[in-house]
Every structure is written in structure tokens, then in C-alpha cells.
Length: 403
Image (cartoon, rainbow, N blue to C red; front, side, top):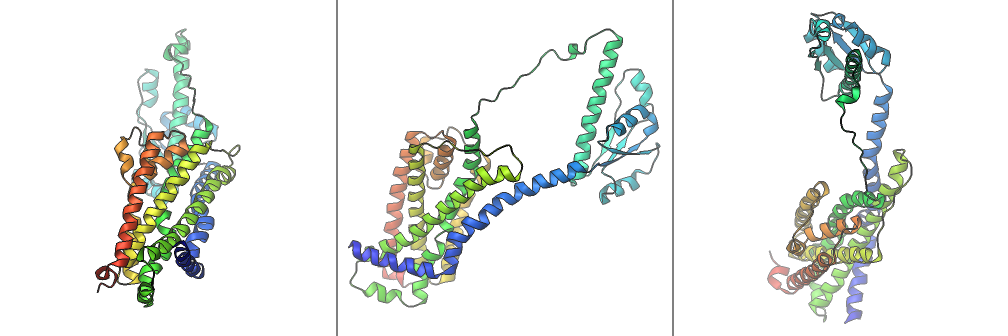
């Protein structure tokens, strides 16, 4: 029986190698495009921040004559270019200049500001910012920081006049120490990205092989000949299943490898970090990760194969597989940004969720043996059910030749 399964397996793999679409999904996208997608966002963000840091934002100060010392002090720092205007300037025209990017910040100093400072009363400073502009937002943050420094100087001067120490305003000194190992930080970074890629590429990696193995055979009118051969249906399904699972698993491994290299080694160098980071992954954790990925790939391969055989055409099968991909993406996208802790043990019985949680916990070094065993056991059951569904689809005439 194994010789017959291997014959079907190798035949499907040969068709896969000849199909450029599958090769693109299995090799080109994981190795080339996904690292580019992973790196381009942080790279562009860092470069944009560096460009903005080299520019000096322009701040218009309306009523600059009210506090000339403050305006002169800010201008002397060189952090902001000051355009001083008297009180009563046309704010509507200034706001239009702010929208157009001619200026980046509008500061209004109220009348009588100097007298209020002398009387040691607070002065209300109004700031107008264009939140949709990075330059304007950065100018606002700079102004707030500068105003805070100037305020500290005034407070220190007032305390000194009274013979008091500025430490009266700071009764506590906070010292923070981070005990998170560096390997765990890298694990969290991978734990946010890798599980998402695993569940999505378990579907996308072998989707063309799965569709071609069922719906493609129907459109080529070769499925009838295959079914009529003196070979049990379970043998045919097993061969096709192994082909889809092989392609998907190779695609997932390539994607994880390229993503890990991109995040741990290339990204720190691109953004100018001190050095690269690494993940401390034990042999047990690696085995748990590989077993979980393999079983989940098997589950998705069997489900896609059943969908493909059930479909009446290649296009219909693509629609079903696309819906399946969207279904696994939703929890994956949720867990990318939400840190689930203390999940109940029964959660690890649910496919997709259990894979996401175990992959992330293994990479972070927090995986527990009960959770891993429950996940593996549940996936074995789900794979068996999905494979049985695919066998039934291949051997049931109403499903196989439905019109």
C-alpha cells in the first residue's frame, strides 16, 4: 500500500514543481517578499524620524511681546524656529498656513502673561497643532518639553529666592530595573509575528496544490480515470494529502526562517541597533513547535483537499480556500496585538487558537507541558477527522461528481 501512496504523492509533487504559482507561494514569497514586507515598515519609520529630527520646526508665537524672555530662551535653544507676531494677529490665516505646512505650530500667549508670572500665578498657553502632520506633532512635543524646562527654571529661581531647595518638590526618586532577559524580549517579538505566519501560510503555502489535486483534476477530466484505478480511495487521498502537506510545511519552514533572520539579525542592523539579538529555544521547545506546526499543516491540508474535491470548479475551490484563510487570520491578527495570559486549558482544544498560543509561548519560553500535550492531542484528533472527511469526499459519488 505504501508504494501506491508514494506513487500518488510523487505524481502530485511533480505537478506542483511544474506549477509556477505554487513555487511562488512556497519559495519566492517566504524567502524574498515576506522579509521585505517585515523590514520595510520599521526601516521607513526610522528613516522618517531621522529626517524629521534634522529639520527645525517653525513655531508662530502670537503675543510674543507678552513673554519676550520665554520666546528668546526657546529660540536660543535652536530646537524651534520662532516667528514672533504681536497679539491680535489673524489666527484664521495662521491656521491655514499650518494646514499647508508653511508653519508647524501656533502658540498663543495671553495678555498680561508677564504680570501673572510676577504674581506667581499660572499662565494659560494655547497651542494649535495639526495632528495629521508628523512635523506639527513633533513641534508640539518639542514645545511642551521646552516649556517644561523653562518652568523648572522658574520654580528653581522662586525657591532659591525663598532659601528653599528644589528637592522639596521631589520627595521621591524612582529607580527602575528591568529583569526581563534579552532572549525573552526577542521571543516576544517573534511570538507576535511567527504564529500569525504559521497559521496563514499553512493555508496559503499549499493552496494551489490542494486545489489542483481536486478541482483541477475535475476540470481536466482526469479524476474519473484516477478513481477507476484498482486502488482504494484512502490510498489516493493519502498520496494527495502528503503532497499538499509537504508543500505547505516547506513553505511554513522557509517563511519562519526568513522572518526570524529578518527580525533578529537584519532589522537591528538596518535601524542602527547596537547588535543583533537571539532567542533561547530549548530542544523540547523546538520539538513542540515543530510537532505543532506539522499537525496544523496536516489539518489545513486535509481541510483544503476536502474543499477542493467538493468544489465544482477551480474558481469555486479558490473561493472556499480564501474563506478558510480569512477564518484563520482573524484569531491570528487578534493575538498579534493582545497578550493572552492564563488561558484556560480547554482553550488548547480549539484549532488555530491552540496553535497560536503554543507557538507564542514556546518562543517566549513560557510554554507548559500540559498545554503542549493537550494541543498535540487535540490536533491529532482534528487531523484524523479532517482526513476522514477528505476520504469521504473522494469516495462519495454525490460529493465527487456533484452538479
